[in-house]
Length: 380
Ligand SMILES: Cc1ncc(COP(=O)(O)O)c(C=O)c1O
Image 1 (cartoon, protein in one colour):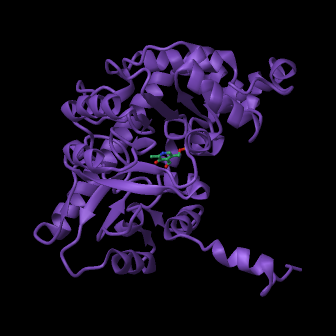
Image 2: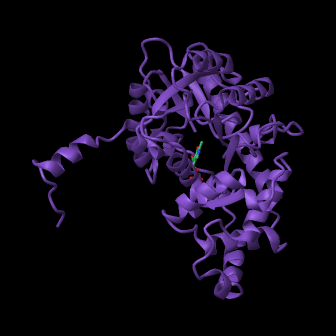
Image 3: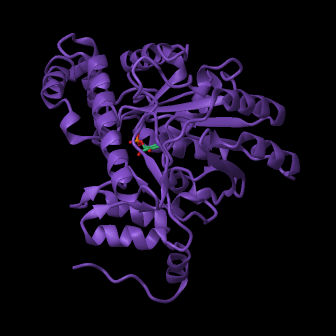
């Protein structure tokens, strides 16, 4: 039988202080809901490479089990760190395996960044709107948020420049999703990326580049603007977060953080105190999947690009046909998300509620704003 929680006294007062956030409720709701889910960042289930995973994991257990199943290094398996470094090299991020920490999802990367960088009450710069899951990872440090609006070319970096000039205390870091942003689908222009790096130098800031969707560009032959981490001057400034969640399967909880060895060492220490290391069987399964030669990993990623392009096109067509003159929306060149601006007076919460009643989940825009605001909905 469930135990009742205390209703008075010290524990009750402490519990009352920990109220839930709308974003947390939305994430909990989105997982496993029996609806047409446009809310969360779930990859297309038909893309999970089940048979290849079965072969790779079977070999990982039977042939490598004795080697990989004992406690392992907190940094992650060297072979997987090498694979990550090699794949990032193709996107212009030239690093060694010693710059890579394997994490239990990028969510953990975000959490570790907060543990290492944040002091109580520090300020974080975010985009507005931003990925609300990140805000949950920093909840315990109770940061302040300086939120900078996003337009069709990503974060309005000029606005950040003005805010930084005015700030009494510099923020600790800038968190952003420069490529196919969650939730808006827009990307930061190259010019703004460079400007942001200049500002980071001038104001001595760290940048946290969260990039789960950067490999899903839709226009053949035109890769997105290069990751921030690949630009000159970024090595010392940018912590880069990437994940296997969207290109393989999120339930595997396999992701990575890239940082200078000194920063990485701090992240590793924080991780050691958290879960010691990421599941080594999962790591070795992916090593086998990429290296064994009976599965074309890069063709799999390309198939994802095709599948998500079709989904984007279907959504754009449906919006065009249904709402052409009433609302406006973004036209993402990649990634999972699209942002709809509703007319004045129409509430995103009401639209989301009405959609849910019809078995369709979309998220109201308000929860993507760290300091409130926003009357839009997101289709993921
Ligand atoms: C922007 C962003 N960052 C991080 C994550 C979490 O990724 P992971 O599954 O690697 O924890 C997501 C998942 O939706 C995301 O959209």
